[in-house]
Image 1 (cartoon, rainbow, N blue to C red):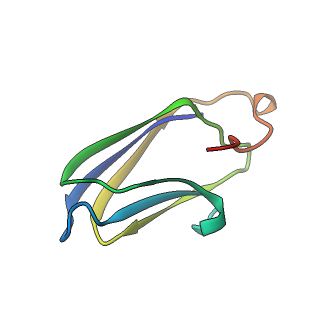
Image 2: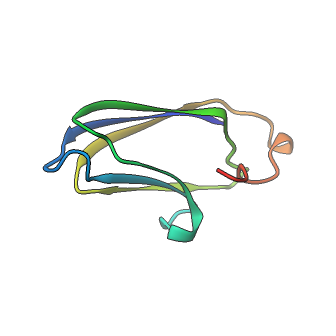
Amino acid sequence: MIKEITVSVDSDPSPGTSDLGLYEGPDCDVTQVITTLTPASLGMTVLPLDPGLAIPKGGTFSFAVQDMGAFVTLYGYKVPASEISGYTPNH
């Protein structure tokens, strides 16, 4: 269960116009967007996910970072696989 995503932007030639996307699956498929983020400036941006983003057993996710240098960190916890039947709907 992912509870928070942090993005630390260390380079961005045009702040407020660069994007980061989080996707279900391994290939940044635009039909599987979980969320997008456009940081307004350099530094840390925190994206809380409440109640959380479920990733099923064997599930994957991917990030696409456009036109900026960024370090992305995910925070969360494990739950038994039987408690998660699929990705969180309606994200």
